[in-house]
Length: 214
Image (cartoon, one colour):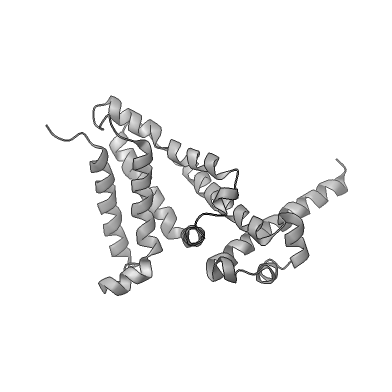
């Protein structure tokens, strides 16, 4: 590859990345319907033609946004130092990671909420989401296996159920943060409220998989 070809390839990668980040910002702020191509190109300091050139259509761009948000989650999760030999503590650590990720990445919650409003039609077009979801669920397996081998966790635990329990307990609070604050008359975004909820859901998840006393 010539030097000029390498530079052009690097510039193309940078343009794609800039458009993708702009799309995440615009879709998060304006939703799918309101996230028009011209808004995204303006946010990316690019032009409409480049978006169609690199991504094909607004719909295909949103599919890439979905894949990217899951990929980023998995990448962050892969950096965790999880020790299966201490399954109870490690499970609590994993719950804390998922919770903190949802809190610090509101765009992740927003993109998932948008896609559910559209009944998952973009997710069904992705060839990557099944692989990405498998990676996310797979993180739990060595923790659950170790807990079962040590006689701490129930033998009938379904890893998919544990994943759904963690995801739902973290997602619902954050996706409904504003309505819950109004309904309950409390600022659910306050640090002490979030800390209390994290401690509660860590206990709930651990108790959900523990062997019940005879």
